Length: 327
Image 1 (cartoon, rainbow, N blue to C red):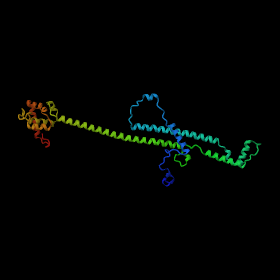
Image 2 (cartoon, rainbow, N blue to C red):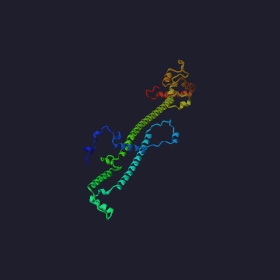
Image 3 (cartoon, rainbow, N blue to C red):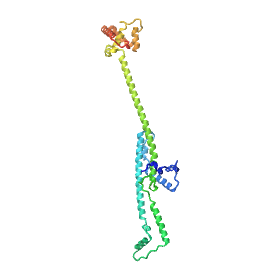
Image 4 (cartoon, rainbow, N blue to C red):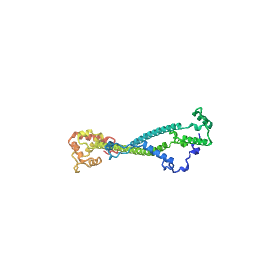
């Protein structure tokens, strides 16, 4: 088989440039007949019945349905099923018309016109009986019979095309224009629907990615806030002995250091009753004077607790620590 590129017959004719045979207005009687038949087929196979009164009254016409890819895909599936059904009905009706036309043409075909003159005479004699006279055909009769035979052959050969031949056949008698027109109408409608479906899918995918990103960001912010809240509560100055015991070792050492930096009965040189070292720790760890007052009172009144804090502070000072931690 020769490659397509070497076959010059497959190249489109330049006279059809910028022309669309499916959309150009029909000019010849054959084109007008095809266009009319196509319009009838569209009305027959693609017509939509009007909704019932109950459907009209029950539907909310003020609601605007959101266009989604799934909804467009359902429309595509419905239209494809409708087109397949229309093609089946068209082929069935064309086959029925083809067989009916062939039947009537065969029934109306006169085989006598195909006989030679001597065969025709013998056939007429046999039809009329044994005592019939010989039939004599003049030259005029022969011409008329020849003309009748030619007309009969023309009518017999001009028949309804068989609908299942390829629409790409080079023989125009084997091409069913109604199928080509329906396919063209189908493609003109289905292609924009598929393009719109793909656009909506891409848009929905981007929306879903943005939604997932926003959820991740909210989850990260929530975890970060919880971690900051946990650290803030862990570093918060205790308000009682029970709360002090629940704190971590680092917080306990920090509290002990803070309490031991001041005098037993407060620092008289400051309005807050804190020593300069305590005020420095207060600013560094973002404590307030009200927060440290309860533990200062316990430290001042509970000698056992005060001794424990001093021992803890001394042990903390003797341990080699990270120089970045001041207290």
